[in-house]
Structure formats: C-alpha cells, structure tokens
Image (cartoon, rainbow, N blue to C red; front, side):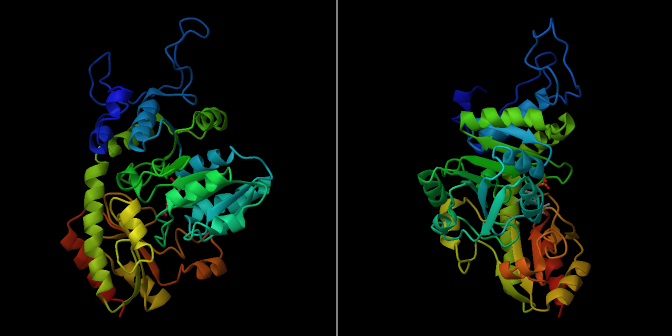
Length: 389
Ligand code: P1T
C-alpha cells in the first residue's frame, strides 16, 4: 500500500495493512520480528537502509508507518514507553524554556516534568485549560509549547484542540496532544491543528496489557528530523518484539474501541443509578461540562469512566476488594477491565494538596472498561457498589 493509496483507506483498513507488506523473501503476511542488533553492510556505508537497531529496525519501521497512518501523520516515531516519548520530546526544548501543561495529566507525566525536567531548568505551569483563552494569561517570553491530554487522566476533562491550536500558532507555540485516552479511532489531534501527537501505546493501541511502549507523530518535517535524531541519540527505543506486539494489537483497534465504548455506556448507566455513587465523570453524559465539545471533537466517548463514592476512602477500599471481573490494577486500555484508585495508585506522584484541588478525591475510582460481556461487567460493578453501603 503506497502513500497515495493509504490516503483513501479508512482507519479499519489502515490498522491492518498500513506500513506492512508481505515479507519479500517468504511471503509471510505478518511482519517478521527482526531480532537483530546490527545489519551486514556490503562495504562501509553501503547497506539496505539499516545499520544498527537503536537507529532503525524493520519491525519498528512497520509500526511507525502504521501508527503514523492512523494518526494522519506524515511521520511517526516509536519509543520504549509513553514516558520515554514524553522525555524525548522534552529534548526539543532548552534549559530556561517554559511549557504550559494541562493540570489534569497522568501522574507519571506530572512527575517527569515537575521532578525530573525542572532539575534541568525547564519551567512548567500546570493549569486548567478547559477555557482555551486562559493560555494567553500563562504565556511568558520563554514559553515554547502547550501540552495537553484530552480526555484527561483521570477526570476525563476535555480541551478544545482546534481552539488551543489557533491560540498557540498565533503566539508561535507548539501544541502537543497526548491522545492516549481517545486513540485515533475517536480523535485526530493533527487534523484539528495540533503540531505533535503523543501516545502511551501500552494502552488501547497495544490493547492486550502485554507490552509497554510510546509513539510520537507529526506532519512537520523540521520536528520529525530533530526527533528522529533524538530518538537515536537518546536511545529510548522499543525492541522488535515490543514493536511487533503493538503492531499486532493495532490490527483490532477499531473493533476493540467500538466494544470499549458500548460497554462503558452500560457501566455509566449502572453508576449514575446507584445510591453509593456521588458523582460520575464521563464525556458522554449530557451533564458533563464539555459534552458538546465531546460530540464535536470525538467520534465516541471512550472506554474510561471515573466516579466518586459517597463513602470516600473506606468505600473505595471496599469497592476495590469487592470487584471480581474487574481487576485492581494500574494502566488502562487493555481487553480486560481494570479498576484504579488514582489517589493511591496512578496519581500518587501528585502532592495530596494538589490532588484535592483538582478533584482527585480519596473516593475517586477510575474504571477502564474492557471488552468482556457487558452483563457480566454491569453485574460486577453493581455488586461491588452494593458492598460499599
Ligand atoms: O506507562 P507509559 O507507557 O510510560 O505511559 C505513560 C502515560 C502517558 N500518557 C497517559 C495519558 C497515560 O495514561 C500514561 C500511563 N498511564 C497509566 C499507567 C495509568 O494507569 O494511568
């Protein structure tokens, strides 16, 4: 499939074919796992495009091309984890530069920026960007980029990507969007105006909780050239088997996402009708403050729902002990349903006072709804909620 053909296909077809051709030597339909660190050169500098696997590996190349096609990106680069992708992106900037970051981001992203990169004199402001115009108040002379997640982790708040892109470009800033929660199946940040899209491929893209990985996509050749250099120079690359696992996971992204979305609607129905639940965060609810933006910006509402239990910490503890089909575990986006208690698990790196200000309550539970039978999931959540009363 060449680039021109690619532009005509739907995501469902690209997920299975983009970047992949049958192996020329055997006809194998699946991309081989090229378990090699080096490549024999005919003579020094004369080779078939591969020299050393930190620089490039054919299995990784197939993944990079496939995922770039799904994100409508001209260029894609794979990394060893979502955090490795974020950290390599930070090398685009220089000590003294300032980044405006959404205030509700994955705890590990907050930790990376606040506790690691500030030691290299990078500066960050974490602010609520639900109203895009707020960015204008936070811009300083040294501001270089805006970093957002939408929907956010764990509170599922939305940012208006198109509006933020317009403001950023007016001011000469880059807009970087972590599209992990939505995936390209539900949202295309580059089409909406973002400069860079970033992923933890550990989640929906891999989809089977068997690999950790990251990805960056862009349409800007200058950004790609620098990132390609950094990918090799910094070296936080995925191995060939990890690349293969994400590539294989991608083939079912569309069918999994469809089921994640419908199963989540069923769980939201249980949560909104149960007396143990104080509040439900889900962009598909008409009560969600950015429901209209969700219908405009996303093709569905996603597979994550977050809620607050009236009984706070004790009830959260009871809920997590009572679930049977859902597993108490960090991460999200796999075929199996997972329940997370952000204050203790995924967002513990955020100081308690900051968590409280954000609304990451001790009674907050985040569900990553898997693709099991919806009746079994509903029954499981109901009995675990009953147990908290
Ligand atoms: O875990 P890693 O592949 O390094 O990805 C980090 C990351 C980046 N962005 C978002 C939106 C994420 O949710 C994550 C990882 N999140 C979890 C492990 C979690 O349970 O929320």
